[in-house]
Image (cartoon, rainbow, N blue to C red):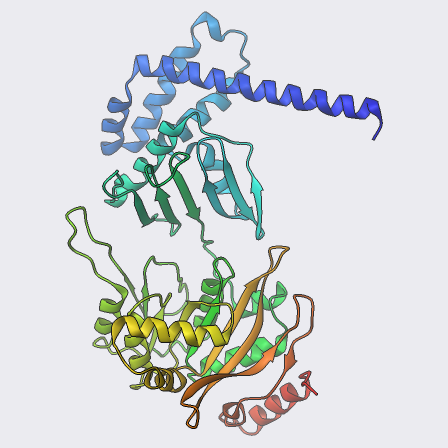
Length: 442
């Protein structure tokens, strides 16, 4: 890059910074003048009765402010942008509004008033937006939680909530957070990704898609394991789309994320935290026990993270096969260890008894991972066996891949695949063609 180009780029950066500073100062001035015309309390009172009227009152106050001589040099377009930013700040998500409206952004993270990041296509980016101060961040958190019947304060400085759109919200405030209020919003698209969509996106090849479809069809109980943000819930939802429409599904989640837009018979249950008085909590374990009395064909637990793992295994071992869940684990082997630990939260049982129940309850553990480039892929799948000599549950690989770009290598074909019901011989031919296409390990 030449010296002239570097000077030009530096000049552009300075002008952009100066423009942003002027916009911030103009917004502060407009906010002050509007508050002298109509107070925040008045707007809040009107909004509670008529949200549309509250927005109109705010816009009217902005127009009155612009009649002052000090606003004469500001263009009409700049004034309109200031009005929209103020409306977003008062009624929406302020600086986060644009990111939440971007369909390609999946998560927004506020690390303090001047530090906002977002995830786009699996990669983190720093936003040029910022809040005026920590008070504005805290006001946004309170505005999000208010309609949801939740609250956050020094006595309870952390909160999880779900927006009406399905977005998951997590907030932490001082004294736990040292750099001001923290806010994370995980977005969920209205359209559900299917196994076919995930195959097209490169998460796995056609052979894996067919195998997983057959596994759900044949009522194999499956656990999807992986790290945070690796795509566990996305895959779980895609698998759930393969459940026959004649079956009754009960979903149990800590914060409702699963979506069934086409299945006609779905009952959705969501756990409830304790209230400000410390009562009223309904755990996932309570819901799993309750679901067994609701005549389920399939039980889908969004995530096993506590003593509910024991009830989930008991359900799978007492006629509710074909159930689905997710786990935080780095491999199928670690998934077994983690399940054993979770079960011991609920009952003090010998480890060999626990692992025997795990082997009998779960047919497959499917491992997912997030790659460096942000893409999500299935890295392996294992079937569980109980070794009666060692009295331990072992994870036997069905397939794996050595790296993100490597091909899937198949170690074996589970016995139940050969037992798929035949449809005039067509299914046998389909299975044979599928098996012939596999890249088997030497």
